[in-house]
Image (cartoon, rainbow, N blue to C red; front, top):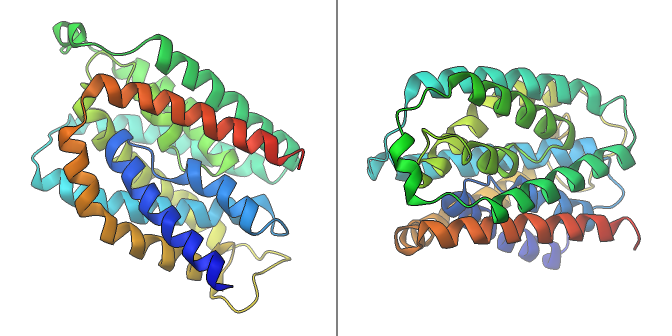
Length: 266
């Protein structure tokens, strides 16, 4: 890898951590198009596998800070919703090897655009606190099953999908969204990662450390830079208003979807 690529990966790691801390997006939504740009000759499955590993590393870093900040969530719902997401991830993972890159990119773009529009047009307000005790267990399972399926087939880690989906559930406050999604990215990623590590790709990146479809040289660079960024990310999180956070999330999803679409015509 060249110096310019390494510097780009360091910047991506910093941005990935910032997005994960503020919005619950694990960084896969950023890493997939970026890795696709930096390494256009490797298959999307390798991009997805490496991105997924990065997402898990970033999420673990953030969860340590969330625990210190005492941001509590409903553990029972987390477990049940995570099971739904894992089922979706496994289904999407299996399908990803039986569809073309064009189909994967199309799913990526369409899903992000729809979620961006829903996030921007249906912002969560403080009025929803009145419904905080509502039983949305089943609603959450369906949302997580769908989100996991899209994450599994595209490799975007689930955060960019799960964050806007989870934000629509009545019992989840704005402050809890990132905590739920970071936990889910780790739990859902473990099962999916096993499959990627035990498959042998036809292409590899020269001069790097790779196991199966995961390139650990890229993972190490991005996660390390993410770790150094985490302190600043949490300070920014504490000052950002929830309503502004939701608006920024919608805009980010839309811009990245547009960028990934443009890559197909360049």
